[in-house]
Length: 150
Image 1 (cartoon, rainbow, N blue to C red):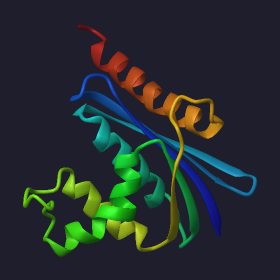
Image 2 (image 1 turned 180 degrees about the horizontal axis):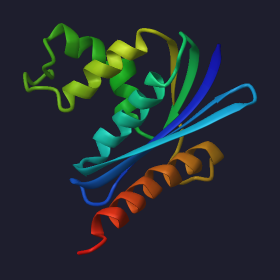
Image 3 (image 1 turned 90 degrees about the vertical axis):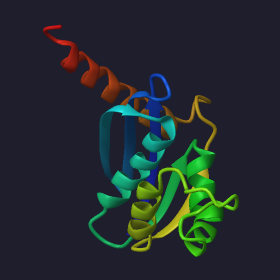
Image 4 (image 1 turned 90 degrees about the horizontal axis):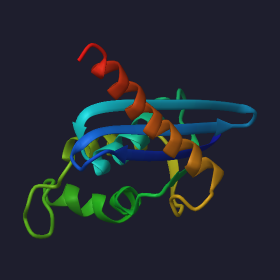
């Protein structure tokens, strides 16, 4: 199965309340996903968007995953193998930030053939704009529901 995925993360403050969004498309089918965390970072939300999108796939797939995060794209295509070889340490022998999400992404991505692609954010790409909206709506919805009665 061929799937196109767009992902994005957003954060209000860094750290601060954050949201992520994903759009999965295959043939005539589309599915939107989003989520929220109360205290997180933008990078964690970028990783979470890709992780949850890939987890949503029911079968091994050929995936083109579009992200505006070079952190996510380079992490998966350039840095991951070295981190694993060094026991999840950077070249400077420091622990890899967000190792829990990188490890989960490594595991779920092994089920698929993924072409990790970068798209410039906030530049009018319809898929990127859609997932940016999803991520920000997740923050809006969660912060509105937690502020009721305060």
